Length: 132
Image (cartoon, rainbow, N blue to C red; front, side, top):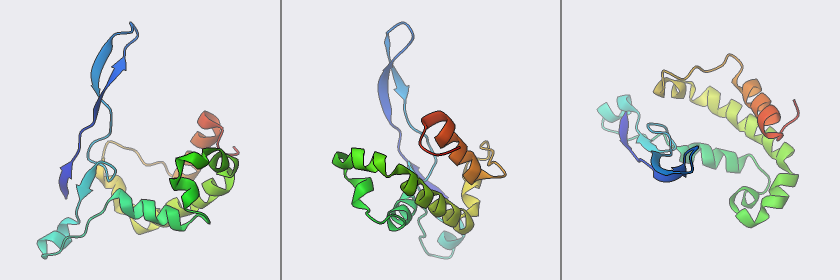
């Protein structure tokens, strides 16, 4: 159940260099919204499904959580990205088993048959952050 959501706006230049006010973030996702379990809510409980669950799980999957939290350690983070990515993929696999219903929040989004492999291919091909 979508409880509330935030809207983020900002200015971006178009092809002609003109600044335009644009909407800059997704809406209706655990990253930008509070989403409660509707069945639990009808039973009198509030069970929030938010990005914080995923964030905490990711931090538990790395040896040094401060590496992901401290922006001044970006170079070190970059140097260890392959190990961190393997842990991230492990975390994604765990969350996918735990929350398979999350894809239903955005019915227009097509979840690939092999989502982890799709993520790894994107990280490798588009960002050079993983081995292809």
